[in-house]
Amino acid sequence: MSRIFSGIQPSGELHIGNYLGAVRNWVRLQHQQPTIICIVDYHAITVAYDPDQLRVRRREMALSLLAAGIDPDVATLFVQSAVQEHTELQWIFNTITPLGELERQAQFKEKSQRQESVNAGLLNYPVLQAADILLYRADLVPVGEDQVQHLELSRVVARRWNAAFARGAAYFPEPQAMLTPARRIMGLDGQAKMSKSMGNTIGLLESREEIWAKLRPAVTDPARVRRIDPGHPEVCNVYRLHEAFSDSETVKDVYQQCTTAGWGCIDCKNVLLGAMDREFVPIRRRAAELRANPARVDDALAAGAGACRLIAGETMRYVRERMGLD
Ligand code: SF4
Image 1 (cartoon, protein in one colour):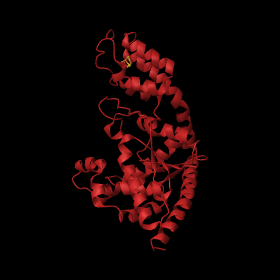
Image 2 (image 1 turned 120 degrees about the vertical axis):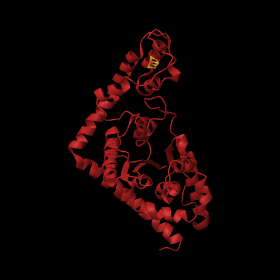
Image 3 (image 1 turned 90 degrees about the horizontal axis):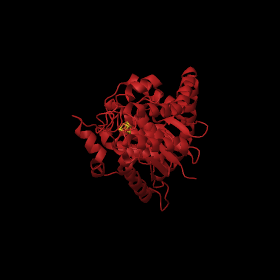
Image 4 (image 1 turned 30 degrees about the vertical axis):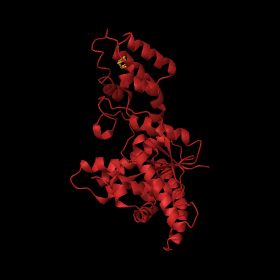
C-alpha cells in the first residue's frame, strides 16, 4: 500500500490556515493509507531562531496535531531530529545534486533575497526534503502548489540515485504529489496568505472570545461600505471560511444574504463563529486533556520516532551497501 509522508514546520500552535490547508486532510488520509507526519525541526534552523523557543514550538505543534485529530494509533507522528538518518541521507543526496538545480528553486530565490547572508542549509533545504521523503520510500506527498517544484527535485534525486547505485532496481520510488484541494486561506487582513509571521492568523486552540476578537474586525468585501450595500462573496475571505466550516445550506444562505444585503458582515461573521466553534470545541477539549497528561504527547512522539528509525535504518543499510559505505 502507498505510504504518505508529510512535513510541518515546528511553528507552535496550529492556525486555521495550516489546519485547512494540510492537517484536516491528513486526519482523513491517516485512515486510508500508512501516513507519516514529521515535525521538521532541522528545516526550521535554516533561519535565525531561539533554541528554547524551538523546543516549545516543536512540542506545541505535536500537541496541536494530536488535538486536531492525528491519531498515534493509526498515523506515525515524530520529530525529524529524533531520526538522524535524515541528515545522513541528505549528505548523500547532496553529492548527486548539481548546485544549479538548487539555485533555480523558486523558494530559495525568494527567501535568499530577504536575507543579508544566505546559509548553505537554505540552499540545500530541498535536498533535505528529498531525504525526508525517500528515507521512508514514501510514494505520496500531500502538497500545496508552492511545494510542487521541491517535490519534483525529490523525484529527480530518486531517479538519479537509482540510476547510479541501484543496479537496475528502482529502490527509491518517485514520490507523487497529492495536491491538497485548493484552499488558499487569506489572512484576516485580506492582504496575504494566512501566516504566523504576518500576524494575521486565528490559532486553532484559541478560545471563542479570542477568535471573535480577531474575526469581528476581519477584512470583508470593500463594496459593503453600508449595511444596505450588496456584497460579492467570491472576493470575501469570510465567505471562503464559511465554505470551509459551514454546511452547504448555510453557505448558500450566506451567498444569498450577502448579495441581497439581507444581513450585515457582523451577522455573517457570527454565523461563521458558530460553525468554527462546532469544529474547534472537541479540538480544544483534546488539547486540554493532552496538557493535563503531557506523557501522552511524549509517548506518541517516542513511538513515532521508534517506528521511523526502523524504516530509516533499513533504508540506510541498503544505501550504504550500494555505495560502498558499509
Ligand atoms: S456578508 Fe459575509 S460574505 Fe458578504 S462581504 Fe460580509 S462577511 Fe463577506
